[in-house]
Length: 136
Image 1: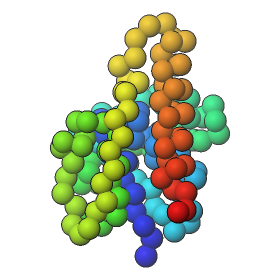
Image 2 (image 1 turned 180 degrees about the vertical axis):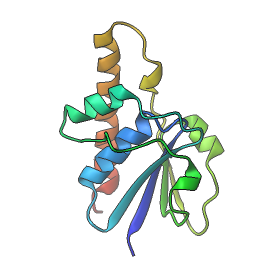
Image 3 (image 1 turned 90 degrees about the vertical axis):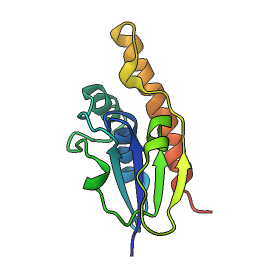
């Protein structure tokens, strides 16, 4: 039986999508990675772009709600405060982890400044995902 990890945010547009992509790259075979949003709004094109920069292709991922992922989740990682507050109840003994990550969806400034914010969030999430998936 594979362990199932869900990365949950509000829109399943940026943070949870990047976490899913990183998780799929770094997870051992025995771990299944999912993402969802409380109110899915579509994958942000800049999330796809900046993940491609580091060799992770999330272009086939899509925004989905909690009802579109398996219900037998083992670990839910909320990546924003809103998702933490509105997290659905999953059956069984579900481990809950919370990371309060700034949403790059709302980044403002020049195109370079916005991309820099997406990259900053990508690096933060990537490091956290690696730590979560590391044994022991």
